[in-house]
Amino acid sequence: MNPFFCAEQSRQSGIDIAGTASEHRLYVAIACPPPWAPRELDSPGIPDNLRELGQVIANDYDRYQTRFLLIHNGHLKPKSGTRVLFFRQPSGLAYAYDKQEFHLESIDAVAPLVRQYVMGEPLSATPVDLPTRDILICTHGSRDRCCSRFGAPLYHQARKLVTDLGLQDTRIWQASHIGGHRMAPTAIDFPSARYYGHLDAEFLRSVLTHSGDIHTLDTIYRGWGLLPWAAQVLEKQLLLTHGWEWFNFAAIAQVLEHDEEETLNRVEISYRTPSGELQTFQAEVVADAASTVYLKGSCASDKASAITPYRVEKIMVGQ
Image (cartoon, rainbow, N blue to C red):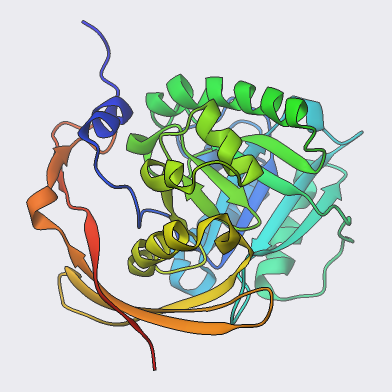
């Protein structure tokens, strides 16, 4: 019997994947080579002090709103030690997360630095100035086999593509679980924190170069991690309307109100163009019950669950 792949089932369903990007205040990406355990901080390369700190932070997520990721690219290893990347969500209008990168003598030094960073204490290390674009592709096969089956080949294709395109400041990383097995291969484009799913090499070329038909993003764009999930659905429509220029706009969004089931959400997005023009849109983001499909959320799921996409209604210029 052929193995089941939840991502193939999801892709064949044609369901819209907008609104599925995670929103975290802080990402901590730690360079650590595979193998990775299903729970990334249980991996053999993770020291006890980092594992214990990760558990403390996870147990109080509402306070810290922090997501740990493991990343690896054997061609990008520091001369010695390891590196850790912090991506912090800024306040107000923004077009990307604020990034800081540190090169440390060993992975044992990561936990003290992360603790200082998360707690707002003085840092014991100095960041390195590397204005890079970092593409994280999930290859976490021990978490879900779709991520290795589809993510690993894309990772190798992406590295070659970046070289062929001469994108010297763009780095490609293997990454641990970023959410959304059923949309594999999935990726996050940092520092913007835009999420993509069902990627292939040609789709990725458009993402990397911000060129081609903007509507190629229609089936692969999961959302912008700077925004609440419901606002991501409206943001996708604005992106498709404005084209690639939209990636240069700073934005902020809020959910003004929603019903108990979150089937009806009134959202607002304000944005600023590079020339300084300000604009605000409001809309209703409504569950499209008629388009509900039943899909397995992972390859190991025992049964399918209802997945309902959302549509945008009543767009208006905000007050």
